[in-house]
Image 1 (cartoon, one colour):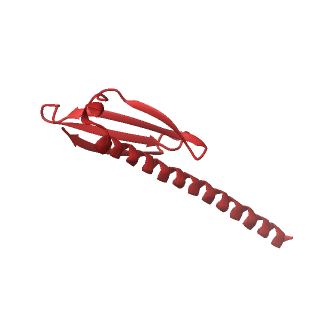
Image 2 (tube, rainbow, N blue to C red):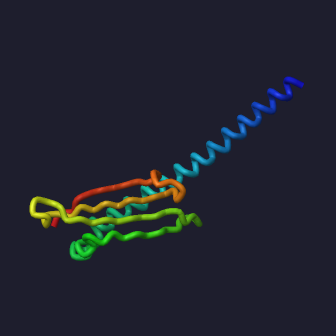
Image 3 (cartoon, rainbow, N blue to C red):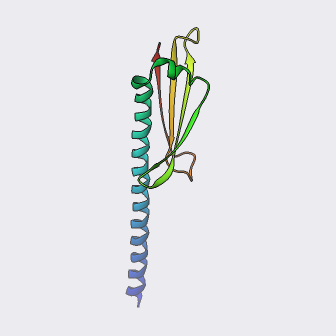
Length: 116
């Protein structure tokens, strides 16, 4: 009987470990997707968009809610600021991507400067 109790405790501990491992794997998968989406947005604003279009975004943050693979918990926020000595030399582009709607800390952030 003691052996049965010990085996039951070990089985519960093993099941909890497997459950937590799967949750961590899913969260890391979402993080990887968020990194790819944020990087794609940053490259798009750096190389694909004309400077005038990016400049028009100064002071107007954009929020996008994205659904990837049936999951709608991705939120992308793009911010563009003027920066430099005279505040007109370059643009500071920040892309933040939240990949877990239940936590404010699960977010990736990329930042770069684009010259004029």
